[in-house]
Length: 277
Image (tube, rainbow, N blue to C red):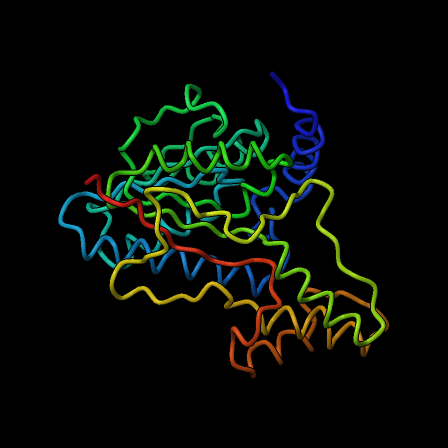
């Protein structure tokens, strides 16, 4: 059965696919955040590949135009781990799916269609994935029950002891950001019309724990300084302007320590599926 919000989300990403195409800005216009997310994913895959003796299977759920998968493939080859990692992507939107396949046509990457709310549509066996990456995907399910269902379905795809990397948006951090904006008389930021931000404790479920492989140390709030610079300081100085990639934002986000405070709705959480007792 189709959800009430499905057409809205599908239409949004069809327009994104048709407008942005194969560019790295597809689904994420902010250069700093795109680079940081990609760095976190690359680091996790490389760290796990060096720690786990078996061949590593990595799944990018909601892989968009395939930019992250292609970047992973390039990095894996550059560090000599191409024989140790298998890359797979799933994308529901037909236009993005076509782009993802084109983006990776020259790389050993498998991209299939599917819906994480319907495990039967995924060409993936339960318990066969070492690392599952969700990059701002769960927030596109605009019903809390669907978000929890998707989380449970993704956990089932992962091996016992495997990892899930969630890069998602959270309502409590948005509240912090808006409290800071209010101090300067700025109107609150709101989620995009196709997003429902996650509540605190969203990942609290039996069999799942916040844990990363040894050697991976990306903190959940790494974009906090960037958000404060971009959405508070810049907006206060420039009359409520939100310019994602301005010289002002580039300079101060690079010059200041990352991850100060908790002002970024986008957080990075690395979770581990506990081995069965």
